[in-house]
Image (tube, rainbow, N blue to C red; front, side, top):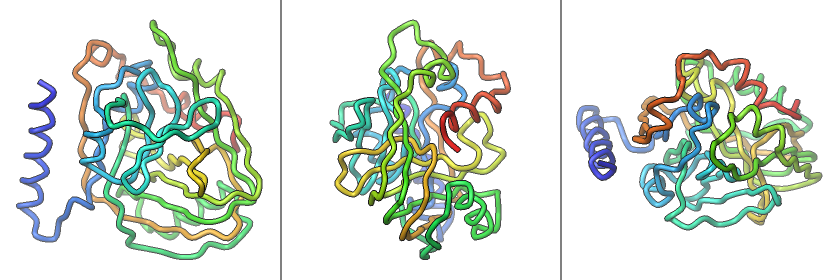
Length: 262
């Protein structure tokens, strides 16, 4: 069944590409599962990192049993665990939630030093001009402060994410160089993905990082890749079938994303 699902996705991508002459694989965000399913404790990995890399060289997510934060950069997958270390991940490792794309910047610019995370969001909101598309966001350079987190591996029966993050590990870096990887998603994907900004960080030496809670910019360069196509792979597992995806988890998600952050 899984092979049929992956084959179906490839067929769909081929059909869309064939129908639009100005379309390429670089315009697609491919996502595994939904953010609300993750909030509800659907943590069993269903797609391998090897499969995931077929759909993108850039992105983020998490791992089987919610073990740490995923950063996909230049076709390499990294896992930041609660020890704060970024590990290179084998292709056999699986993810319960991830979003990836092939990154090719449409916009590249220097940003003024001293920006906080909140100021950065407001500035990029003005730059992009429309809330209605997906945007892959990449920032490289120096940060005077970077605050990230990771979450521990969970055991069944899985708790909900709002309870897991109470035990998160927070890391604070000062005068650090690295790369921010993530997405700005449109408001109408509420419940499917994080509406707004969802960003992870990897240090320049690729030894640490995590889910971003806050930062202060030094000398940084912003790259934006506009995405106008979106595909989802939904898990074929019992926990997803029975998950309560009718509940409005907007406030819950905000607390999970920003806990101990700005």
